[in-house]
Amino acid sequence: MTIVFNKIHRLKQQPGWTWDHFLTEMDKCSVRGVDEKTLYSHYREPHKKPNSQLETLINQLHGDCFPAPFPEELNRLMRLYNHLFNCKKHIDKEKDIQDLEFFLQQQCEREVEWLRVSRLNWLLGNIAFDRIPLYRNNGMREPLDWCKQSAINHYQKSVSAIEQHNGKYPQAMVGASHLYKARHNILACYLNVVPQAKRGKDASIIHYLNVSNYIANSKQALEAEPFQWTIARNGLRFSSLLENDSDVKYFISALANISRRFLNLAYQPLNHGALNEGEDFHWAIENVLTSDYLASIEMKMKKNNRGKRS
Image (tube, rainbow, N blue to C red):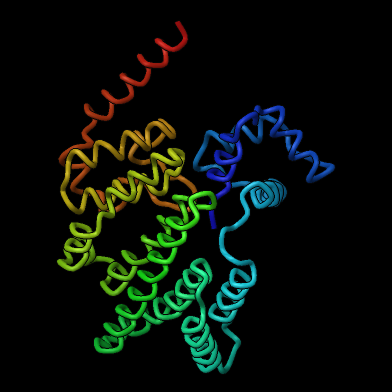
């Protein structure tokens, strides 16, 4: 689910959405509302955790302004699967998941609408993906490889269906963030078959990053929505694994434009660790993100801000 920080930015960038208008729209959703200081702080700070009231209001307003592109019944089916998968007391969970999987496979064969094809394959990909940790942790190589490839195939079909829809219906295109998530699912398959400690040097991950246009697609998503710090952070992470200094500079600049706090490598945004705690960022920190380089970015930003005020 998109974080509240991103939803606030997406709402705020709509034409005519001043802070006064934003607050007025929120007041329509709740008699209690939210004060401007609270709203603005969550707009500026990626580490801020919203309270339940703010999260509920933003989710409602965002849902009204940006309806999910996929059919609602399939979104609900995905939520049902998530509840089933996470239920620890469900005795016949795997059998029921297999039954659901069979149903989805049959639906995919009949479906002709691109967004339905995409969402059905997305869910089938999730089902295969969620089996990966069990096989990885128990050294079961054959079913692990099968689940990985099955998930990749379904996620790729999901991406292709979105692209087909966007080509056919340019007036109702699925947004860049959804397309990014669909593509990121494929990368996640390569990542999750490998133990965490070995991912930075895994040849299959590096190869996929080199041939998949992942970095270019990340930049494209950021051009559409520059506030997406998780996309910029992932871009920095994988640029570091690829040991690409120019891309590292691109993504650290993107993060700094979202919040200067990211220039502090010990900064921890919401639900994420600090950059200097992540092994995947090690090359970037050692070879590009030196104290002097980070200070130069901050100095340049301060000069630009002074120029804007003068």
